[in-house]
Length: 86
Ligand SMILES: [Zn+2]
Image 1 (cartoon, rainbow, N blue to C red):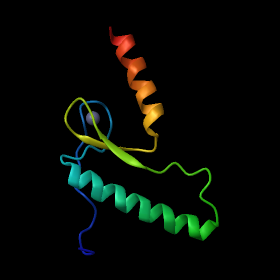
Image 2 (tube, helix red, strand yellow):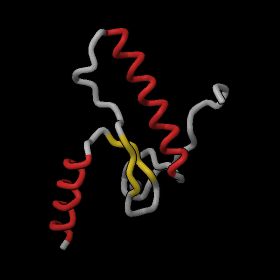
Image 3 (cartoon, rainbow, N blue to C red):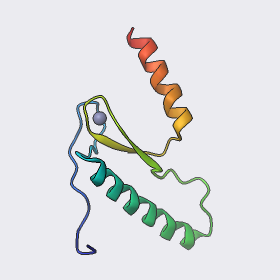
């Protein structure tokens, strides 16, 4: 497992660079991002001000993206986007 270098991703049509093709890959990448965050937080002694992915979501193109947004701000933004495209 530890010899697995990174998780495969590909650019997504929605414009985001890192799109994972499965929930499993997104979950793996999320775990890696959080492990990195924790190591850095320990080094500098605080976790404030860090924009680190907290969860993943499936976008309209069927790929999974990591995001540092919490659920409510994401919902607000997507609702706004829907309203604009109408
Ligand atoms: Zn996408």
